[in-house]
Amino acid sequence: MPTVELIHVSKSYGRGARAVDDVNLEIRDGEFLVLVGPSGCGKSTVLRMVAGLEEVTEGQVKIGPRVVNEVPPKDRDIAMVFQNYALYPHMTVYENMAFGLKRRKLPEPEVDRKVRGAAKTLGLEGYLQRRPRELSGGERQRVALGRAMVRDPQVFLFDEPLSNLDAKLRVQMRAEIKRLHRRVSATMIYVTHDQVEAMTLGDRIAVLKGGVLQQVADPFALYQRPANQFVAGFIGSPPINFFDATVSPAGDRIEAHGVAVPLPAALAARLEPVRGRAVTVGVRPEDLALSADGPGAALDGTVEVLEPLGNEVLVHWQTPVGALISRVPGQSAPGVGEQGRLHFLYVKLHFFDPQTEKALDGAAVAV
Image (cartoon, rainbow, N blue to C red):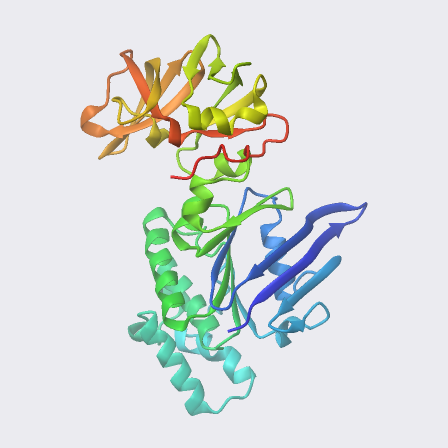
């Protein structure tokens, strides 16, 4: 399978407004890369430029060694699965999956072999003579996947294929797509606005904001070492907590709304370049605990809201540094109105420049 490379790729629509701005990205051979970001960030536009459905304003798109900017979509050897299943309602599942192969005039035995092979992989063997109206949403999406699979494309492109499904089906289809990737070892690019989908599916994740690529990393690196405040806030559910603070002139503590948090020597050394300056501090909900578990500090807080999730509870606190959310085991959750102390480890803290929103070098601590 080939690599896909975007080299200084931009897309403009009239009056110079850029939907995608100078994106450099390499999708490795056989990799599952997820493009994620909020609505309007340019992720689908990037995918459509790879597919040839959008013209590239600037830069180059390469599939393997070939620059494909001027290559028609049908000659790029890609297969795309859309949010809308786009199945022919009057055709059976077999006919829908075979349609593209017959248009290419493949021999009938080869068409039959490819369709039945894809149907077996996707668990559709018993559905081949049904029509789309007789299928559930998940089954229709599997047919759309099968229609792409039978082509044996160089690259699979997925444009929010699960957004029309209910929560349970989305979980099932995520597993189907991961199994598909493992079986065919194909290069896949997947677009979603759902960061849970991104984290569970991607070998690597590319985060976009306003058409600009923010960070590309594997899910763990993205979560533990975000490049900036946007990535830290977008990746993770519930989102990371932020509060404003100032590094003391002596560099031995951070001060936030009258609360002083002493810093160990190692962390003070990392924050030496911003001594006496404002910083934004980030701490994830699961890193706020009701009991100390190592070197760290604590904040007093009052419980305002509880969100029970079965085995755990999201606790909304009001603290001197503002509203914070913690994630605690269900059986140990405090009650609404109760006072408590929130403990956090120094190694779990992230620090950002409040002006640029970039992670401070060496201060976004890896676990």
